[in-house]
Length: 463
Ligand SMILES: Cc1cc2nc3c(=O)[nH]c(=O)nc-3n(C[C@H](O)[C@H](O)[C@H](O)COP(=O)(O)OP(=O)(O)OC[C@H]3O[C@@H](n4cnc5c(N)ncnc54)[C@H](O)[C@@H]3O)c2cc1C
Image (cartoon, rainbow, N blue to C red):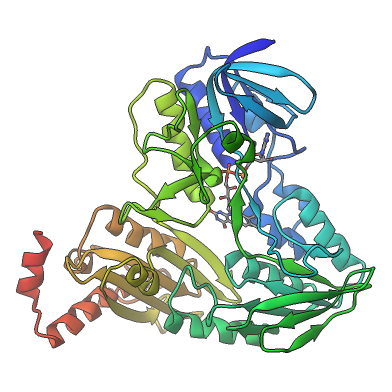
């Protein structure tokens, strides 16, 4: 049995980041990475491969991202771990010793336990096989598809299928789309956009069962009693209802876990010495209220893995928690969201105040100027920014990241209302009206209308 300094279990962004950061600090270390699949993938790009924007091979990452760092890539699955002996065993029958173990096994799409959900041509979206199966079904003449789940993954799938000319339904139990990213009033435009795009969006309705034949699904039954009829010979259903962490072998061996994943501290240490974890396989906290938060995203996996690598290599670092920065597209709309929505903040016990700003993406007389809407959410007690939502017909991530930075720096409404910015006719609205500043000022106006004035908010800012 060969024993190494570090074994990495996983081939996604957390594992690749850990491999590179650890070897940067300790180039002499003997490190191997287990990854069962042929390629690491850019999952975010799958919908665009499905719609045919580029060849599906473009979603594969190069193995050199691992091997150029001097890490040995083992195309194997880890089947069991023995924490006492510091060993893992793989699917080839070999056992490998380690001094440090890094777990980055990610998460798998949930297939809800409803009748018929295990029928042929009921897909989920993550693996290369998922992507190829969907593309093949479309190429073989699918005419109708039903997507269950109107989060970012489901919406992106539904749009990809429409772009392939497929009549598509999008179903969610929530009363509006993207309920984990935006609030209801911001979602109205998106429902309209999906309708205009030809996606039949049915909200506030649960999928109760799938009626099957031997070949596939013939109907999707909704809680309203409505049946969506599809052709079992050609059509398909896709579930996009969330992810569950892949942690069974580690939980079985005694690692502390919750239903959200492996329990880690801010240094990404697990309950067992010399074992670190990061990414979708972990349970992690919100940086805003230091309580568990969902949202399994690459933008959380990467910084967590950097912290894990630095700490495992003997440096000091801490992950502050996740800020929930996320983005998606609905038709022409680019949507960015960060922190908590007002609904989620209230559910977590915060009273909130919100403000809105609306401008055009560029000076309004410029050709191609489009609408830009911003919602800023602050907690009423300290007036600290706790969330932001951007709807724009220009990329929204830059503005979203400004709001995230404000949350990270614990800025108040007044602080963010003083944001210094740049302006130019092709690139922004008039200097007089930055949409983020306008949204903060709008929230401050609401407070003033209630008798709380700027001077008092200055006092609150000192809290
Ligand atoms: C369709 C889709 C779209 C997405 N879009 C976005 C987006 O736009 N923005 C964003 O930030 N995030 C997005 N995400 C989420 C993002 O991809 C994940 O958060 C990220 O991949 C998590 O990285 P990870 O390394 O923790 O886990 P993963 O990327 O899931 O990697 C886990 C790895 O562990 C391996 N593994 C599991 N078990 C074992 C075992 N026993 N032995 C060996 N290896 C094992 C797996 O095979 C895999 O290689 C999207 C995800 C999906 C599915």
